[in-house]
Length: 310
Image (cartoon, rainbow, N blue to C red; front, side, top):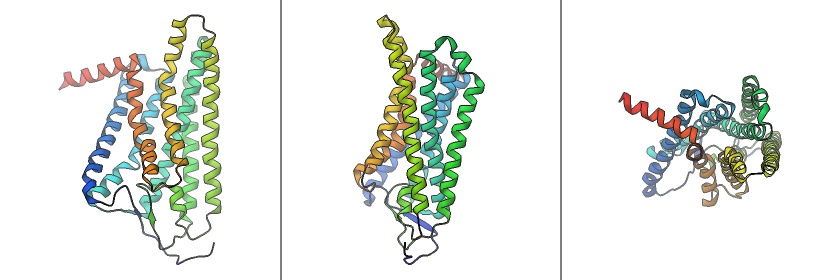
């Protein structure tokens, strides 16, 4: 690629949602509410699991890690967007942009891996119930989470370091509300072939391999449930994985919508990005708490103790 007015970039401009200042207070209130609900809901899930000894099991261990990843995931984009709306500024420094990309990839990858691990957990629980405690021992659970962190951190670090070697043209406008890697690469004047190869290769692997693992787990789960003779037994078995299946459908459905959107600057692309980065982390606590009696009881205990102290 021929260089075109290459220069040292100090900041990018995030176009965001609306150029009209009339809608800025509405957008600020909406996104602030979604952010607070997400953080509070996932914190309550973590507190409920940590405070109730009955929930100290592999499934809830993974769920608490997912809640932490969701809080961190939404915190990589929304606070900066709220600051920009409030100050009526669209700028983000070069260092902030690279940092945002890094943590967005880290926690987005963690969500993907944790959902896959949780699908495996449900597969073992339903298909091998007598060996569940032996297979899903604390050592394996800790190893699965550590591996998820290692892969997510490693890929994100490599991609971020590759971004640092790029030089950018005089056009520093990113048509999004956060520093999206693919959009930032289009602004580079230097050769981005290695970046694009790594991006497409890892995106495919992170999309196909974990999703294939989830599909395999649920195919075996469905086969086991169908062999249960009683309707009540089938319902009980299915209810143990219904919440996770709902979260997986929401996560991959919105994620697919983001990557199928031809232009992220269009309203359609923006809406799918909001669904993926904000709505999914916000709804996860509600999905798990509304369909799970153990979580409901633990949340009632946590809230009851809080009100009693006050």
